[in-house]
Image (cartoon, rainbow, N blue to C red):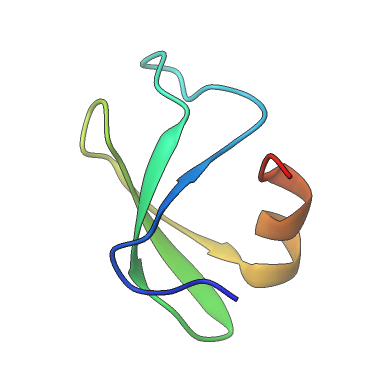
Length: 54
């Protein structure tokens, strides 16, 4: 469902104000990089499904 270098938008913005994230690793957990501040997080794919704008 998610591909490398794909830009996704979340419902709620990050603390920095950006709601765009770049997928930098896929698998059971997905690694995302914030496009505003560069913060990298890992999140479970089922949890990310709930946070992404449809």
